[in-house]
Structure formats: C-alpha cells, structure tokens
Amino acid sequence: MPDTTWVAAVARLRARREPGVLATVATVRGHAPRKAGAKLVVGRTGTWGSIGGGNIEAVVIDRARDLIGTPGPEPELLDFALNDKVTGPHGVQCCGGAVGVLLEPLPTVPAVAVFGVGHVGLELARILARHDLDLHLVDSRADMLAEERLGVLADAVAQVRVHHTPLLPEEVLEELPAGTHVLIMTHDHAEDAALCDAALRTEGLGSVGLIGSAAKWARFRQRLATEGGHDAEAIDRIRTPIGIAGITGKEPATIAVSVAADLLRRFEEDRP
Image 1 (cartoon, rainbow, N blue to C red):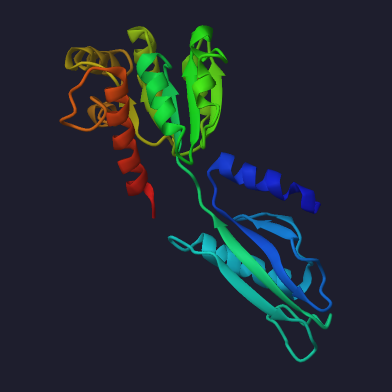
Image 2: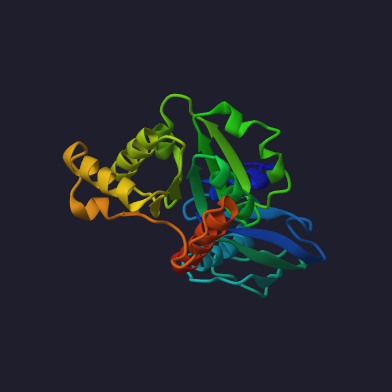
C-alpha cells in the first residue's frame, strides 16, 4: 500500500484493538532509500507503508513484532549504516548513508459501550470521554443522542461512536471489538434484560455491568436462568451493583464518578 495509508492503518488497528508499531525514518545522513518522515505500520500479520524496503525494512519489521509481543514496550531508535562493509541479517544495503528509524509501539486502548445515555449515562460519557479509549454510546431513543445534547463531548479525547438502535440495541453487541467493557443502564428494564441475555451469548466481551437494585437483579437472575437457559456461572459474569463500594450517593454525577473509577481500575488490571 502507498505511504498515505499509514494513518488509516493506525486507525484500523485501534478499531480492532490490535497492537502494532509505527516506524518512522527519523534521521537521514547521506544517501538513503527514503527521506526522513517516511513511515511504516507493522501489525501482527500485516504491514502498511514503506521505509525503503531491503535490510532496513526487514529488520524493523522483525524488531517491531518483537515489541508487539513484549509487555509494556517502550519506543526505541534503530541506527543503520548503509555501506558494503555492513551486512545485516537480511542482506546488504550500500546507498552510502546512514538512517535512524524510530519505533513507537501502538498499544491497544480500552473500549467501553454504554447502553443507555440518560442522566447517568451522559454523565458517565462526559468522564470517560476525557480518557484515551473507544467509547460507544448506544440508545434506542433518538433524542438522547441528539447532536446538541452530546455537544458536551465535542472536545473528547476518546473516539466516540454513537449508535441509535430504535429496535434491537442488543445487535450492537456483535459489532463491538473484542474485550469491550459493557455497561447496561437503559431507561427500560425489559431492554436491560434483553441486553443481559444477549451479552451472555456474545463471545469476547470484557466485563458486563448492570445498574439497578438488588430486587431488579433477583428478577433478572431468575429470568436469565429459566427463560434464557444460562447457568449460574454464566450469570455471575454480570456485575451488579456497579461502581466503587461505599459510594452511595444517588446523584447521576456521583454514580458516574463511581462507575468510571471502577472501570479505570479494571483497565489497569487488563494491562499486561
């Protein structure tokens, strides 16, 4: 692919929650295959763009894939001398110059799906939007997702994706990337119940949380077992109540802070 696709490649890896490495020609002295600024994106199985081919590119790809498999990788700079006296593991490049290539790991970012963007959902979205993550906002009510209402997220650090689902919001679960944390907090208990059932049938999700009282959860447990056919171990995947224990305020902003803090703790636990 041409070099101009490296931005799209980074976005694609992020959307799929796949790690990668961005390699950039940082310094050039003398003759070299590419100018400073040329970029290559390396994923587990694919590459996009080019930093000149030959030994340089092959070595960079090898090292990038080592970094992908390393917990907590750090950026690093590789230096290459391009003359016939230096033999690399993939051959000789004798352009006559020298090149420095910066390798920057592209870690996977957390992903969260909030089903129900009412008072609590919107307050939660405002907090989560200040973090580097992928945030999916799902609601069956168009007015909850109106542009003027979500305008408070205009300066979001997160990548926000809005899903209006007037009929079957649970279908969004199948579209979410692997490892997405799901929070169920819609305006309708029947919708909540359908989402709980669908979440237990969807493979690859992260944690699943449900807002509500103990009485609500007791009814849901019974329905999930008798009507949904889920066993106790599967049902226990759903966390309720959600948030930090000991924070008992009922105000939407208080609940949102508690839930967000609990999620941030889970993000830390997810890191290798």
